[in-house]
Structure formats: structure tokens, C-alpha cells
Figure (cartoon, rainbow, N blue to C red):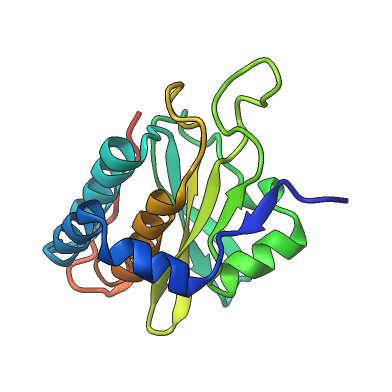
Length: 179
């Protein structure tokens, strides 16, 4: 079975793009200022909505003891609607858990050829040298046709910087699901 997802590309390309993109630096600054999980979820939502062009997302925590992913926060989705393990092939899931961002190779916004529940990207959220969570981005806004290289650099910032406030334990109050 062929996957609709591909690894996001070389880390060096993302690092070069990130260095030249003021959006990435602004996102990094905002994430580093987060004081707790609730605040971090709101900052991730702002970054993804305003800078990336996606208003439907879900955050899952990796539970290594239970060997599962648990939904801890979502935005723009019906509560209880996301079941991440059913959305990913084993190969893509393994890649994301290994720290690779996977981006859909086909359109991620609603259209006649697109599944309205199709994800646009799966972003590993790293903390302590491991993937602690997975951010699923669903349909992009209609005017956004794809995730480009500058967007990939922005996702790399989220992947590396959101882990500490989301999973670092300092005042990590439960994130709330929002609609």
C-alpha cells in the first residue's frame, strides 16, 4: 500500500530556510515564552492558524508504557473525532515516532478529490531526545495549496520548541479541547 505521506526533507534544508524566515524566529520566541501546557497549546494554535494556514489540528501524547497515542488537545474539530492510529500507516507512524515530520503529497484542503478528514501533516513534538507527542494538521485553508519549504522550517521549530512547555512538566496543566 503506497502512503500519501513523505518525510519532510533534509534537516539542513529546513535549518537554512528557518534562518532566513522571520516567521520561524517569531514562533521560536513565542514557544520559549510559554509557561504551561494550556498556554503552549494556544501558541501552537496561533502559529499554525496564522502563519501556516491550517485551522484544524489535534495534539496526541505518546504513551510508551501503553504503546498508544492519546488525544490531549484539539482545535477546530468535533471532540472525540480524531483517532490518530487509524489515520497512519505503520511506516508513517514509525517515521513520525522516530522524529520525522510527514507531509501529505496530495492536497490537504477540502475539494472534490480530497477526503475532508485527510491530514496535511504529522509533526513529531520532541522533548528529552524523544518524540513525546504528535501534532496532526488537517485541511489547509482554501487559499493554501500546499506546505512549502518555509512552512517546513516553521514545522521544524514547532517540533523542536513545543515539547518543553507541552511535556516538560513545569505547570503542565491539562490542555482543553476547543471547537
